Length: 570
Image (cartoon, rainbow, N blue to C red; front, side):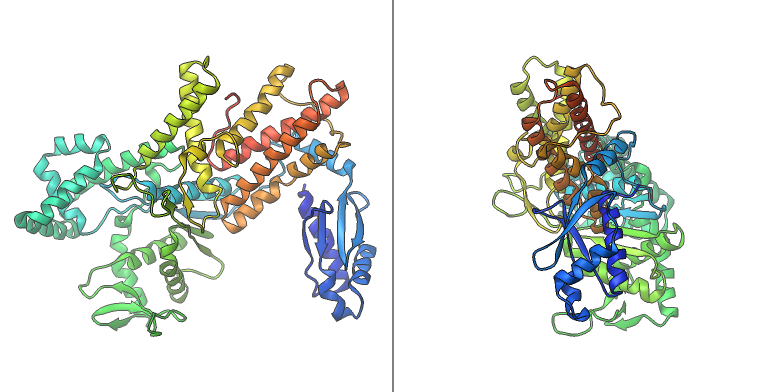
């Protein structure tokens, strides 16, 4: 069954089309009605009629007798009031629908590139947004039926690995592995960098090692693999702690495309797209200029004949389309890389590696800021590690749970503290328009009041507690009575879930789903205050339990799409 919004939108579009093929009606929720349609004003002049006359002609051409009452309002708007019977029957149908009205679409193969930490470096707050936004988008695409291929494009290649491998040799494999296996990646990297900067002999050895690595020396590759494997193990621990679905098998780093870089250059050259500029091989895609107004180059091979990020990204793009057969590709990378990806896509189109029918998108995002509105760092000025961030949030959540329920079992509290901490951190990030920066405020994030992840978790747990008091697991499959305005408002909100999922996916904007879930929880709170449930008459109680059950299920499914747990008890 189509969602309520989809059904209304389709019928109004058909009615407008019957009047004029140039019509573009807009259906949106309204304060004055359930929905309002705008479109008559734009057609009035072309049709030589007043907007109200055009709106009246639309109503003559549409049949909504099974769904809604409509009227012309104001200068030519159409107000739509959904029939209670239609709302109630659609709500009843949702009780037996585990997808809550969200239809599966024709499956598309979707590649989502996200997280992308660097080998031999710990994951810090700068990786948070890419990781949780990418994870949410992957969950959403899977939910609507897409085949998702996650790609964790880790930094596992390049000149720094010469010094890292030499430092591993100096430490001895056993000691190095012991250090790396406990997640002490930053100190390992700092020690290697310090030696590289201060010891000329070490510097020379490191440069020689880079050459050996790039030439495929077996022993050097073996030592490099130790660094990569230990780092990936650490990344997996961080993802598990965050409740992120990336695994070691999703890691396809820069090194994976190393053997393809020469063919990228050869292919571009064969098509006449390469231009030599100051010794470098470049492509000048149309429409890109520098600050001086001169054409902007995408450097594919540097003047020293080395390859940079552009070559690797072009090889990855070509591989994702030609070998993986991607229909859609999403790069969840910070906003400063916007022009880079625009140029990668443009060159991919020019080379024929990115056909018009394949959708490619840079899912850009802003920064996480501290209270001073600068890049979020510790008091000592160090970048904050993700695992430390989660530990702090867990401790705050543990304290709050202890204050609320001092009699709670320690094991239950510990599990809940982790769930609440993850909800706090993820929701604060996802509920912000991803293009905006946001201030990291842990006290606000872990609060069970306001627009926070824990608030939504408590809303879900509160409803489940209601069913435990009623001695029930769920509601009967009946059409609810919507005679009270709070019942009706909640019912309308519940029917909006498919459209919230759809708009979130269409814009790659998780904050839209967050906003929907927060509004749903608020509407349930108003409903709960105005409409007694357990003390109501039997028929009224059963009707209201339907609305309560659907709210809890919608919150649980919606939170899961955000990567957040929905505990039954808090």
